[in-house]
Length: 110
Length: 114
Image (cartoon, rainbow over all chains, first blue to last red; front, side):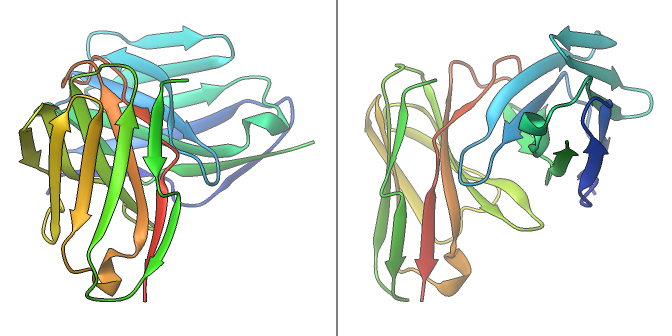
């Protein structure tokens, strides 16, 4: 069966450290993978997109990797801040639709 | 922020009543989507539209219908609401259907069916 897995347990880290979130998938062959941020009571907000032929993408303190062999994407936030606390969703394209993971909640402590 | 407005933001209703949720966009994007978000399931696609009067089913379409009579409005209707349809509903828009473009989301409608 097709699955997208994100760590359902919250990730708690100290301010200033690097947060790394994982998105694994099975039985999909996405051409694109996207990451979104969702705050409580709000809709998801797009952060980054990476293509299947790209290994890595960066935007300010954010970095995304995409390994189509491992079927995995890693999402890094460097020099994390309490304001980065949110739920982060990965999404991949599948026949012209986006399929979303369940998200990982990140909590950054001062 | 993309111009997407969902209404109402909150609604409580009883089993068996009809419910209509509205999504309004000011971006003139061709594609519009309705998702529901439940704990442990993430965002699941209910229906989507690829143009005026052009709609198709998503993963969890049973019990829901949609209509799009204008580019800017996409309506989601629960003909006879059930408790299993208690959820948070999100509307999203995008310029294309492929994953090459991001989707932009509204802030959701929290619907409770008693």
